[in-house]
Image (tube, rainbow, N blue to C red; front, side, top):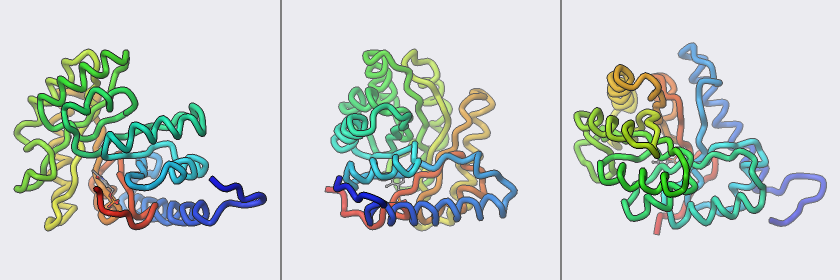
Length: 242
Ligand SMILES: *Cc1c(COP(=O)(O)O)cnc(C)c1O
């Protein structure tokens, strides 16, 4: 990264401003529903954006970053660590995950948001145990009639959750969903909260609700999300995934 003595480089200023706007939106949504912003974890989704942007965000105090493809996330996590050291950055894996990549993801991810089938549970567990780690996992819930965007149907969530909870290398942390394109996000996230409430009866520690992106974070705050996954509202437009 080019040094800008005496001040931030233009991209850092741009990111700082966008981050302030997003934090302002979170604060306003919290104020409207009587929540405290401290209840929410903002995961900044940096997919397709360069390592330097992650380093800039870390410099701005961001400690939770999200990625959606192993071939991008693995090298990025290593490069950021080499540049900034161990500053307590948490890596969230939010994208669709192939079982053959799970072993690698289990080495650097801190929270996998997208566990939606039994074969993935087994692969992540093997990877985490091989790495000597305990990996936090969310069950991704499909709120869509079209299952192409990933996620397990709500009826499959209890079984998957029990499987995760039974794994020595994994810890069941909660649920995640992406709102369907054509749905009212308040209704969709309301369904997710219902799934979470039922899950917590059997697994009281699985309290994470990951919902809300750049376009619908207010709805997620309103229904009770604990984690927001925000990309373009902080980093700007991204090139299509290759
Ligand atoms: C890319 C992505 C996000 C961030 O989306 P934006 O609309 O850019 O905020 C959130 N969640 C998942 C699963 C993603 O793949």
